[in-house]
Amino acid sequence: MNKLLDRTTNKQLMINGEYVEAPNYAPLYSPYSNEKIADIAMADQALTEQAIEAAYNARKVIGNMPAFQRAEILENVASILAERTEEAATVISSESAKPIMFARAEVLRTIETYKFAAEEAKRIHGETIPFDAASGGVGRIGYTLREPIGVIAAITPFNFPMNLVAHKVGPAIAAGNPIVLKPASQTPLSALFIAEVFKDAGLPPGVLNVITGPGGVIGDVLVLDERVKMVTFTGSPSVGIGISNKAGLKKTTLELGSNSALIIDKDIEIDSIIDRCIMGAFSNQGQVCISTQRIYVHEDLYEEFTTKFAAAAKQLKLGDPFAEDTYISSLISKKELERTLSWIEETKNYDAEILAGGHAQNGVLEPTIIANADHALKVSCQEVFAPIVVVNKVDSVQTAVELVNDSRFGLQAGIYTNNVQHALYVSKNLEVGGVIINDVPTYRVDQMPYGGVKESGTGREGLKYAIEEMTEMKLVVWNQG
Image (cartoon, rainbow, N blue to C red; front, side):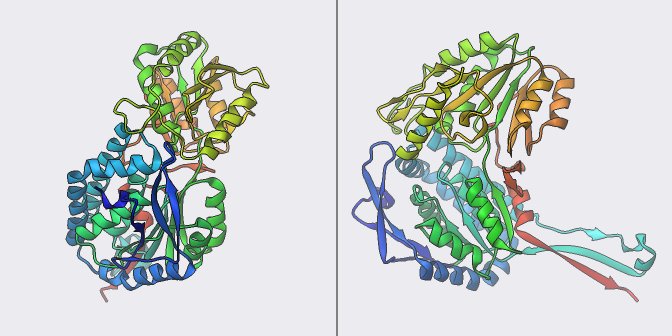
C-alpha cells in the first residue's frame, strides 16, 4: 500500500528533509465517497517559520550547485515518477476525485514538466551588451548574469495537484532557489508524494519544504516574511489580489481566474471538433483554469453544433473516479456542487435553455450545456469551475471577439476557423494571454508561456518563462582602461 494512503498514520509536514509533527491534525475525506483518507498536519505560524528558516539556510546549497547537478536531480525525479506512475495517479484520484484516466495523464505531464525543467537548468544565461554603441561606452565591455532570487513561497491549487506543483517547484530548483510549498487543503498528499520523490532523487535537505494546513495562517506568514523573496500563486482572484496587496516589493506571479471562450466560425465542419469541445468543457469536471466555459457559434452552424454537442455530452460516463470509463466524477466539495447548482437555477429565471444536464446524479454534476445565457448570469461572467458551458449564437467573428473581451478575465481563448484573415483578426484583438487557433482554449503544453491579463493574473509560467521570473538580472561592466 502507498503509505500516503494508509489511514492509520498521520501525514506530517516535510521540513528540512524530515517529517515533522504538528500540534493538530485534520481529517481529509474523498470528495466522491466521503470516506476518510488521512489525517493531515495543520501547520501553525511557528512551523511555517521553521520551514522558511530551513529554506533560507539551504539557499546557498542549491544556489551554488552546478547547473548539471540541479538538472540531474530533476531528471531523477522524472525517472522515479515514471516508475511510480500508477501509484501517483492513485494519490491524485483519491484526494481530488479526478477520474483515473485524467489522473494518469496528469502524472505523464508532470514527468514531462520536470524533464523540461532539467533541460532549462542547463541553459540559464545572460547576454553581452555592446557598450561601444554609446559614446560613453568606448573601452568597456559588459554582460548580464541571471542569479537565483532566493526563497520562493509557492501556493498551489487542487485541480492539478502534481503538475501545477511541478510548474513551481521545477523551475525554482532549476534556477537554484529553495522553496516552501503550501498545497491546497484538499490535495496535500500529492505534494507530500512529490517531496518524497525529490528526497529519493538526491535533493539536499531544506531545498523543498511542504507545509499543510489553513491558508489564512500559512499564507500570511509566507507573504509577509522578509526572507521570502518571491510568491508564486495559483488560485482565486480575491486571494491573489490579497497576496499582491500584502507582498510589497516581493516579486509575485499570480495565475488567477478565467472564463475561457471559444469562437466557432461559419466555415467549420462540426463533426471534426465535437470531441475537442467535449474535452475542453468537461475534462476534470470543468475544474481547469482554461476550461471552455463560453462558446460563441456562428448562427449558420448554431443548430447543428448545439444538437451534436448536447448529444455527445449526454454520453459521458459519470461516477467513481477509479472506474476506467468514468469521464466525470465529483466536484472538489459538496459546497462547490451546491454553488454550481444554484448558478444553474439562476439561469431558469431568464430565457436561457438547458440543452443537457442541469442536475446532480449521486453527488456528481451532469455535464451541463446552457444556451442563450444572458451575459450578466454568473455562468457567463464569473468563473464556473464545473462541467458547465454556455453556448450562444453570433452573427460574425467580430461580434464574438467583442463578447469574449467583455470580461474581467483574460487567460486564453480559442477559435476554429479556416479563414486566415479571421485568425489574424482574433490574434490581434482578443484581450487574453494566449490565443489558440483551431483548437479549444483548454489547450496547454507545459513548456509554452502561460498566463493572463486583467484579473487572470500577472507573470508567466512555462519552464523557461518561470525561470526568468525566478531569477534576478545582474549587470557586469568591465572598463578596459
